[in-house]
Length: 129
Image 1 (cartoon, rainbow, N blue to C red):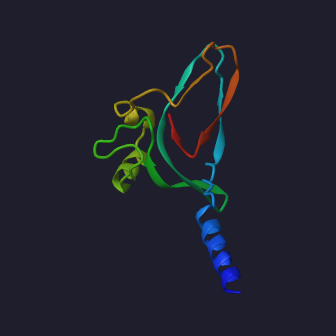
Image 2 (cartoon, rainbow, N blue to C red):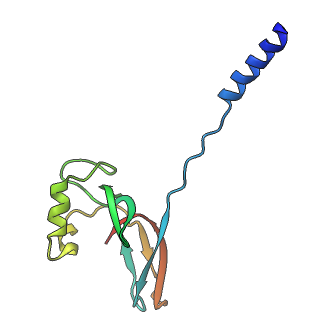
Image 3 (cartoon, rainbow, N blue to C red):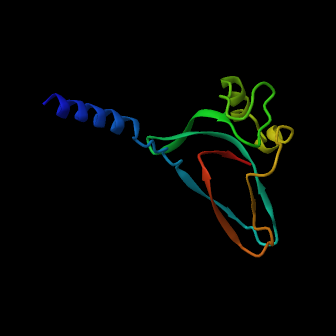
């Protein structure tokens, strides 16, 4: 009986150490850009975050700097200060607000040859320019 329990304990320890961790895949959303005929668009990831449905409205929370945003203080993946989010939300021209803060290779290049009238790409939750 002691040998049986010893073997059982060893197997339990081996099985506990051999479990595989699976990372959850990020949810993606379809981003459709209409009126793309004869145009090429560079898509820049400004912010990322978690999407929640609040009374039928999609809300971005846990906002972090995206791969194409050059923050004044911080780095890609750092949380965005509330003051910056308020400045952005109150901006009359969001594209101009981010114009000096965009850097790096675009998140995506859309309709490079300009032949499509509408293009849809999959993106992770966030804000894109």
